[in-house]
Image 1: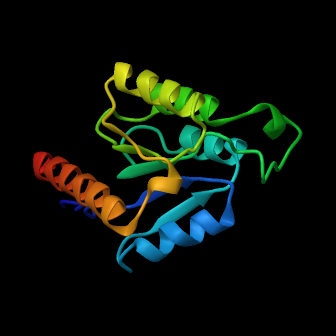
Image 2: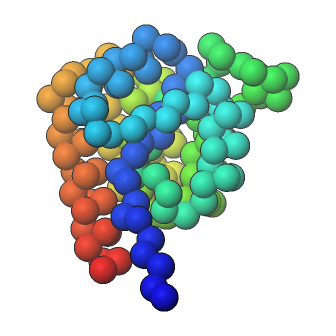
Length: 152
């Protein structure tokens, strides 16, 4: 008897502590794309450690994640810690959109991710609009579709 595995579903991981930004990203997505929101660095690290490899289709990453600290340890964590975990546990095929407005740390994180081999787009949230996000989403979906074609 052959067991068929369901085709993995395109889904995004949003690492963002600002609920207004979470609502903005969610409003830009078509209803068929699930968005999982990790509102703190600690929550994001838990998701990353749980979902290693190529579970996610794309990551939306903020750097300064101090608005929704859930534990005392969260106060000492930021997007840099999250990026290091992504580099260690996620497939290089997963596109990453860094939307942080931190003018020092965000470009540094982008360089680190790119040097590791990730496809990274940096667009500070204050420059983000529907068209830019739609373009990134289209690229992420194309990458996902190509990868699913490789599985068959």
